[in-house]
Length: 325
Image (cartoon, rainbow, N blue to C red; front, side, top):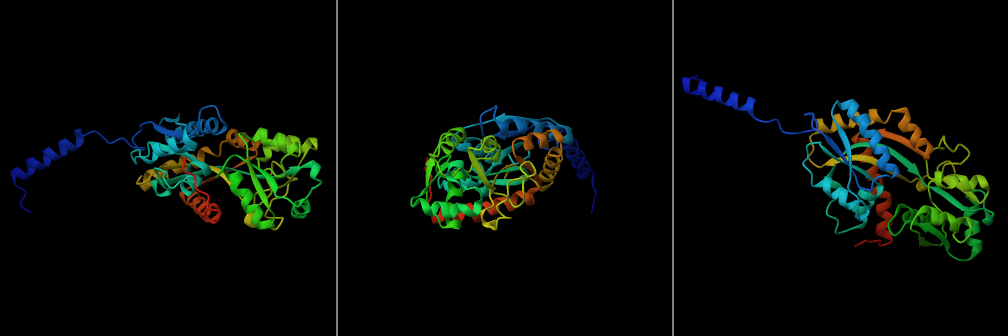
């Protein structure tokens, strides 16, 4: 090739322009990374995400902050991240409700599962299968017989249509062949009051919210919806050891990025998040709440999302559950 004076000058100008051009902001440029929590400040997830953000900041050697964008069952925050630049600077503290269930239940949702790239799974919690002590049922294998002897649908507490507790009652009904009717409550504490009083027959709250009642003898926790026993509750059997692996279920929290975020950026963020989850203080906070670390890369989160589509998606389709609010 002829390297003329003109081409030499052009090359020099191009090099000068490249050196003077601003570097695009990205998660690898030292710019601040924002984790959007789609709930109001002060809650459990919000507080824990701030600890995780601090850990990621140390790992990445750049600022990582938390920003609350609550509203519409997590839709406001999730939509904000779905529409953000795919540069790794804006992440979503997503979970079962804002991501999996919203995309499965709401046909007019302004985002889909494909709007996000998986970054890292962080932690998960189980449900309990609990009954009032007055029922006389002390083991899971006695639940179906009790339900059938009552000759009426079992009243089970939910946190509203389409919630994990609502869908789990339908799943349990199928597995045991019992009739159920859902009763929506504003929060877990109010549902526990009715369970203790025998006004509710079944409750799927977290074990941490019921363990005090169980120790007082007013509630019987028959099983946790896990594959193995939770070390925080060693005396409570897992649903898998009781012969019902189809009833395994959890609620989880993870990190998502906008679709199109480069793979190398995802890998860097994922490594930092997984490392942050090894902090003993974070693990203790989770353990005290009856939850467990389930830290892993994009493949772990992808598998969870697929499980939700297969499990919850089937229940939602078969029961024709659609939310338009």
